[in-house]
Length: 126
Image (cartoon, rainbow, N blue to C red; front, top):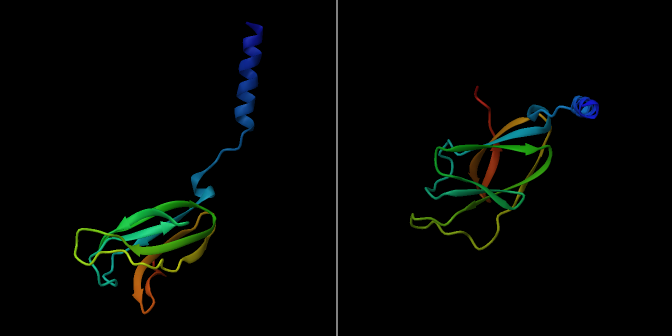
């Protein structure tokens, strides 16, 4: 009985010494939006984070990610689909790099330029 009491007290002291992690302090929020009709295609757009497909966006959609702070590589690409002309390109589009800080809430929207699609800073609107 005595050893179980001391064991319980020891476990309780270990949990009190462990730091409490908070999601607001460890991560940044990245919101990607296709709410505006700036990209003249009805094809699905794939969002690649660190060269991994992380999301798919149709017109008038947005998505959000909790990401660790640091440098993040973002890439947009048309995905093959049911609509005519929705074939992926042969060349990989250029990546955009952004730096996220702990606690950041950043919103980017998909836009079209002479070089193709890119992500443009947007206001949060709340």
